[in-house]
Amino acid sequence: MTAIQAALLGLLQGVTEFLPVSSSGHLVLARALMDLEEIPVLFDVILHVATLVVVIWVFRKRIGGILAALYRFLIRKNKEKDQPNLVLAMQLAGATLVTAVIGLGISRLDVREAPGIVSALLLVTAVILAVTIRSRGSRNIENIGWIRALLMGAAQGLGVFPGISRSGITIGSGLLWGMDRKAAGEFSFLLSIPAVGGAFLLSLKDAADLSDTVPPIALIVGFAAALAAGYASLRLLLRLIANGRLWVFALYLIPVGVWGLLHFGI
Image (cartoon, rainbow, N blue to C red; front, side):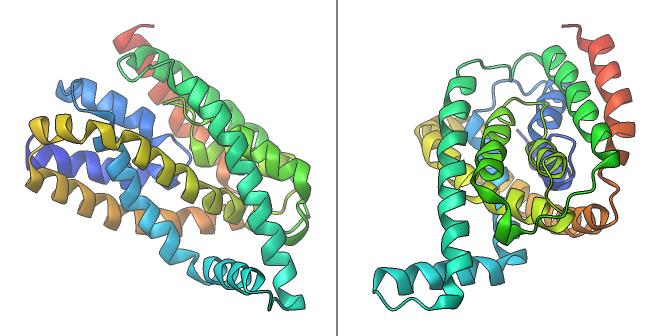
């Protein structure tokens, strides 16, 4: 892999990680077009880590509040105002457990080398986004309830499939299950933190293979490109969620999915 190829993949990851179009699906199609099918999955995960840094920065106040509440709880000096963040932390932990169970099962069905299947799954994401057009939820992040939290964890587990947008299926499901736009977006991105971090730890076993196929400079360039593009795309997506425009990405995914099916087959 060259530095230019890494930069292109990093930019693609940064733009598509937050926009509900499936970053992993786009990486599969891009690698196929670049004839880079032998790149270890750790490279994809490292690009995801770059966009994870963006999530932590953008939601740093909420994350700081959760960590502070957990700390005060552990030293038995928690305050009444900490209760919403403590409940949210437990809901995120429960949803993450559901994600792990489903995601580990799905990860055994490796479709990273099957761009045709990924193209079909992009069309599934388009349908998920399209049905959110009429969503009118009202529950904020402090009263989403356990059932919705666990269902979003399950939705994120399904997002392990390349072609199923993690942000698209989690935000979309949150909207359809009665959450308001801000809550669905915030819970979705907070939920991504342990998921991406866990995927990174699990993929470290591929570190030796990565060094054999991806030069350090290419890895650095790809990471930096994903970081910069990710920040811009997250800010854009948060504005679109607030305006109820999540469905517009279905208009992009449908032709891309159809093209992929025609180009790669299934």
